[in-house]
Image 1 (cartoon, rainbow, N blue to C red):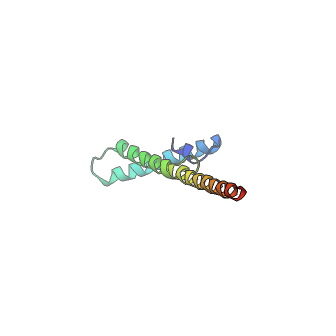
Image 2 (tube, rainbow, N blue to C red; image 1 turned 60 degrees about the vertical axis):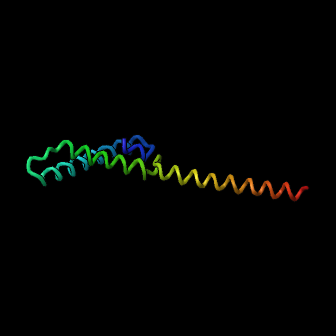
Image 3 (tube, one colour; image 1 turned 120 degrees about the horizontal axis):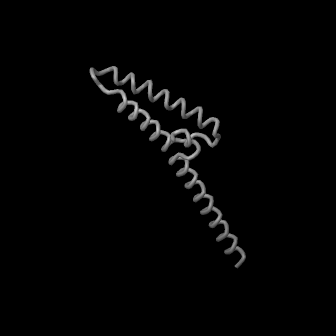
Amino acid sequence: MSARYWTQSFEWMIILSAFFGGVAGAVGTAISTLGRGWPTGPFIVVVAASFFAISLIFGKEKGILLKHLQYRKHKRQVNEEQAETRIIKKGVE
């Protein structure tokens, strides 16, 4: 799921999914080896969930931050166009 926030290409989505899964498995396993008797699975899930949260916020295709910045830019452009329209209408009167 995390890969969908970074690309629209199916090929790259598969590659990124494999990368995220592999890294989550490796990091989760490494964290679980730090403690005595710590289970591996929950740490892998926490790392994968962290990847998802980061992707959700910062993803270049569908990330929340990108969408918010695009919305602000669009809103600013609309406001500027409306201001120009008002100035032109006042000039005509």
